[in-house]
Amino acid sequence: MRGGERVLEHFCALFPKADVHTLIYEPEKVSPSIRAMNVTELPFGRLPGAKKNYRNMLPLMPLAIRQVPSAKYDLILSTSHCVAKGAFAPAKGKHLSYVFSPMRYVWDHFRDYQSGTWWKDAALHLARAPLQRWDVGSCERVDSFAADSAHIASKIRRFWQREAKVILPSVELGRFVPNFNPPDDYFLVVAAMVAYKKVDRAIKAANLTKQRLVIVGKGPEEARLRQIAGPSVEFAGHVSDEELPRYYQRARALLYPATEDYGITALESQACGRPVIAFAAGGALETVVEGRTGTFFQEPSVKALARVMLAHNDGAFDPRVIRAHAEYFSPVRFRESLRQWIEDEMRFFA
Image 1 (cartoon, rainbow, N blue to C red):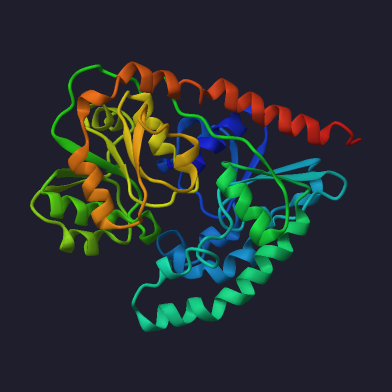
Image 2: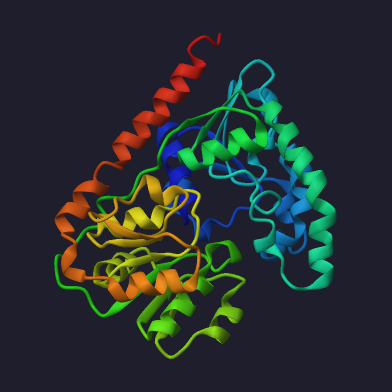
């Protein structure tokens, strides 16, 4: 249950009787509200190895998403960071797509996804141009886009030559709450261990400053990251929904070492009254307020992050002020914005 799944929960709440079609479905890994839906796993998910090795099957996904039975619906809602927006529009209805990012592996984060394994990298290089063409061409199947940040709306304009309405996602204010106790002695990273998250930048900064760092998350980069981690770095692995707020509540600050598309973890930290140290780019600029709810470092480097970590003053931030800022990003506001977007787009459909 990452940010995309949290957004999907809001669509499920708006349309509790809707059908859900997905490339891969693992019921035990999603929330009860998603499991309660009528979920259909497309044939792609039943291919040998698809659930564990889906990243290596990226070139098959554009064909797989065509199997959504769009014709029988009046409205298709897709939530997409990869190929979901490639589902066809209904025969007589509309397709509205909420986008977390254009396909980052073939656009601006292409280098971050180089594995160092020659045959994998060669395959990605061969697939890049065809996937870019498909990514642009499949936009014709979408009547209206919404983006999870102005940062992503600018990418949609740049890569797809389309406009998108910006609807900032919400944070679970009831689950992520402050405890108002002094923090422990650690900085925190909560992230999937993939290259573009730049978790290695946070680890190297902790090594350099000898500051304690706790990392929550799993992913394909974990083995490499463990190899470079010094003695002040701890790996907590996967933690439950119940445990996660406690990691935020006790942290000195959440580290945001990469350019995030939007980044729900920054809001989770702020909802817990804890500040964010973020690279000054991307979605963090839309959720973190310099000096009030966090601090930005200006250069995308280990030394720049290390300097801010060393200068961080726990007493300079008021948990109540940080929490008040997070409350703007409420689930009620987000769901109402989604509902209004959908109603506006469907108003003249008959």
